[in-house]
Image (cartoon, rainbow, N blue to C red; front, side, top):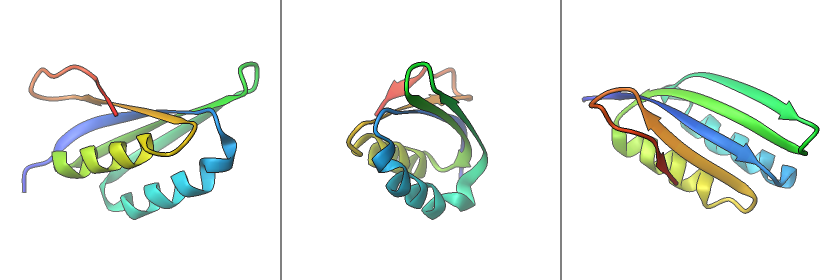
Length: 88
């Protein structure tokens, strides 16, 4: 199975959605290399970066589900094949 390396960048505006976000991330934990979270209190947001090595379908599925959560934005940036970032 071919995998791709990607970063899923997440901005959380609605902290009430964090539990749902964490459940999603747990479901995809087999594909997650690492996670970094930064609370930015001055703007009342949280910034999260998820590094993944997964089939493109899994990366797209996760970013789409995250982007569907109210008050959360997600974008994917792939490390290979010369692609640029794509929003979800």
